[in-house]
Image 1 (cartoon, rainbow, N blue to C red):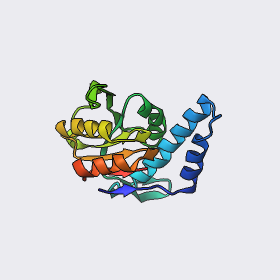
Image 2 (image 1 turned 135 degrees about the vertical axis):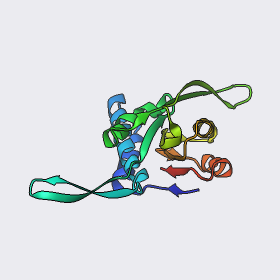
Image 3 (image 1 turned 90 degrees about the vertical axis):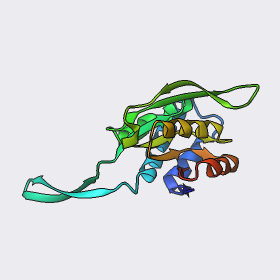
Length: 180
């Protein structure tokens, strides 16, 4: 499983600011939004490019454009919604799919309570948004939903990822990429 620990100074700085016990709600939300942008930037660094010629102010110019990658952003309710504005600022044409899961208190297993996936997932890459990868149960259930719907490539971005969650994900979905 590809796991990328983003060590960019801005990411480390903003994660550090989030840990301040006296941080107010407004500043917390802004930091989560900014971190969503920075992590999505890293998670999309390998998108395929194609060369294209377009009219420029001094005549035709050769430019690079993203080669048709269609993306759906998948915030896991509710915490993942905080990352959504920052990622949409970077990828404004992305479709949004939303997944809600809650833990069954008896079985401790995630149970879906909301699922709105965009159409034609077989043509899209998914970028799952969730601030915390803890045990991996919610993430694995979300990936299961996406794969059942035909999604071809799945990546997740997390502000924090616990070793237990990474190990569980590696065991069940080793093809999923993690950026944290």
